[in-house]
Image (cartoon, rainbow, N blue to C red; front, side):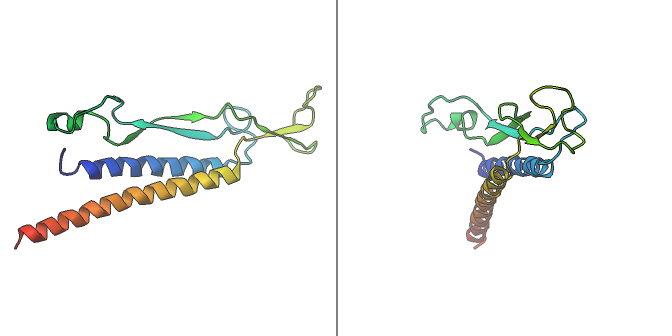
Length: 154
């Protein structure tokens, strides 16, 4: 295990949580967008993360040469996906310019994004706390390195 492995793991988490915060902010900014370039209302975006190494095998702690080859190398963002499983909000508004005009059960209804502001705010708090936790890991290792340098310099 390298000297900076723990810092690399924590920094990968910080980067992933920063991207997650950006995506959540985009979801919140488009919570009322009924028309996009792709057509139709905005759909919330989700961040899919995975471990950097996805080999869930057991490793013996007595084999140092295998420590860097197994799980525990941080996190990576695999993809950003649109949430198609959550239904859009349907609101009756015959004056809205994006209302459904054709004759049918949805006539004069407007379809709003599937963004729940409360859920997004909770996700934003969670992402912020995860970022802070990773930042504390980095700070802890920095202070340990500093103390080691002080001890070695005596």
